Image 1 (cartoon, rainbow, N blue to C red):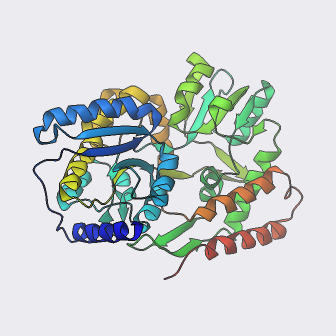
Image 2: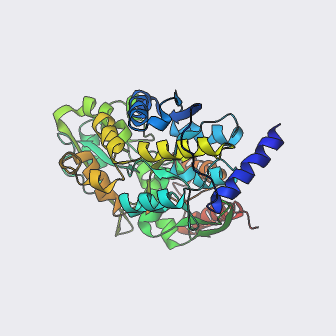
Image 3: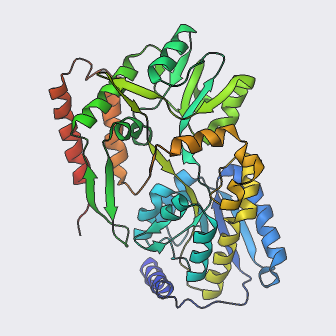
Length: 407
């Protein structure tokens, strides 16, 4: 049965790729949607508004389930047939989902709407090769410095932030055994790691220069951070304690606001200095998006495409911002007075000027990066010479190169 379903899905995807998926006048079956827990009720309300505005879909039964962006892609890849028809996911999962046949290409009409209404970074994030496979939902998946301004009066340098926190008996949280946050140091010194991806979602080549003077400087910056008495490895504000600063994104803003109160401030990441040279911490920028899986029924495909376009559009992005502070990718919402006055989103926007857009990375990249960070935290490299650090980076780089899958 699974083989037959996969064959039918493949045919549906091929038809869509060639612009041959038929439109339909209506649909009255079930549509399953996966969104983050805090978006369930909003999504349900907006789906009902969509139905009310489109009589041809009045009898469509929309089922909303709480499945976060971190789990939805894995669940879809494991069981496309049993997965959601529309689902939220993070940018770094796009290639995996395309390769698994879990995403249908946007229609030419919807692709043009997405390009016209959203910022360039988010449009690039939903594009593989020259094909758009998803609808941008946010432009806020990055990290920056959140801090207590009564303790951290000068957030411009990492060393200064650490020293000010330590003097007050406070901690600074920064998760350096995580491949997402770890790039702040490597990208900051000019070291990079990216992977080329073909239109089918296959990783075909690694582009990396970690085994370089730039990589050594980044690793030494991480070592210096880990040795500081104010340092705590982590990025989850709800589980953090006694902190004056934490490097994390917008999703923890409510917890941090409750902790810091009127002293809550945010800004771009600070600089750090290694061997007399100062670097700006960089890192990844990313996005959330809505995907639509291939359908065996053209009427259902037309319905879920129309609903997904609406749920990723201006009105719903504005509602997500107002409810939970999700940063919009929609150009009009970005220009609203409320968004422009939001100091947290302003900090993210400032940091994104120094960040690199997150492309597609193999699963083992994350565990390999975790291993490097764990070694730094354990003090393995504390007494290493630059030559020894280079040897470690050569081994690390060789592993990352091996993760590409040339076809």
